[in-house]
Image 1 (cartoon, one colour):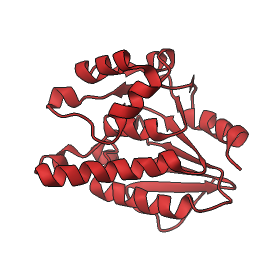
Image 2 (cartoon, rainbow, N blue to C red; image 1 turned 180 degrees about the vertical axis):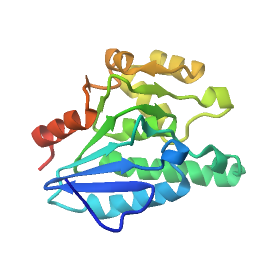
Image 3 (cartoon, helix red, strand yellow; image 1 turned 90 degrees about the horizontal axis):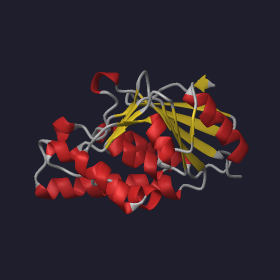
Length: 204
């Protein structure tokens, strides 16, 4: 893969023939999905989903983190009105992923928390490293995810199991994610597994 020049800080994109790897790259904040990162993601989707030469979009992270959800420092500054706008914005962006004509794949390389799990749920396919860690930690913080996870997770793994994960905010590993149907395969390095899926199942 060849790195493209002029990449924004929060996201790195690597294009390789008919696919693109979107890598979250904010290690100082555990790849949190800040407002700036959401803007970069929205702009990237605007240019990629319209490209008929691209058949797959892979989302992944850096080091041991896929992404850690919304930036809590930003969320602490929200009031009721701005929180609604923030929530609706994330929903709209993630729906663009869900509706993309390309095959969308979450290659979950490590920690996948809160809003990042919502992003993964918006993808067509989820594969993970055996070392991946998942959680919807909002209950411990007195909040609940607002980016579509409350709808997509029950649809994927069932209402009872999803409710347990939301209410307890507990962490679980890649093996359990595979057992409950949250991901469809485990592999290391997970990006290699995602690339294999993309090249065999990418949408033409």
